[in-house]
Length: 165
Ligand code: DQA
Image (cartoon, rainbow, N blue to C red):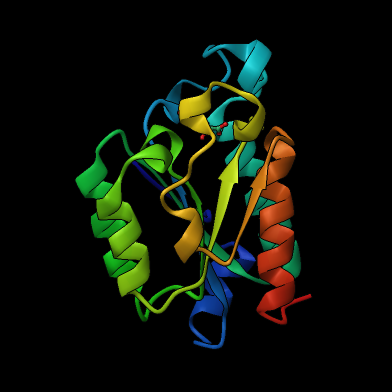
């Protein structure tokens, strides 16, 4: 499902100027269940809560931001491919696909858009199969283990790298 800045927002107005920096946030499988999904690991905020916090920060900084959550690998691959020329940065929580999706890794490698990999939990201190990220070698950096703040830290880094703040 796609979400974007509300009509009449600063984002909408600035978009017409074409100089607006745009960030795409991609959430992978099962992240639509945040809030009720293993809250002891992933926290009690819903995906809508996290998106709202990111949207608020991006709008304050004067950057555009769109969100997509999908449980389907191909939809995420399509979104990464289509981000080329349209977005300046991608913030990606590939969820379980992190650990085995060569298709996502190849998509990131194929587009000229910098990516920050995000995880709510610290994947490095969980089950061994979560320690490996097949996308890590093709992303700019990784933020993990800070809960919702992982996304906000990634957004802050993207805003700085884009020269927006
Ligand atoms: C996750 C960690 C993954 O191992 C897991 O499959 C997820 C969420 C995280 O945000 O902590 O679905 O990416």
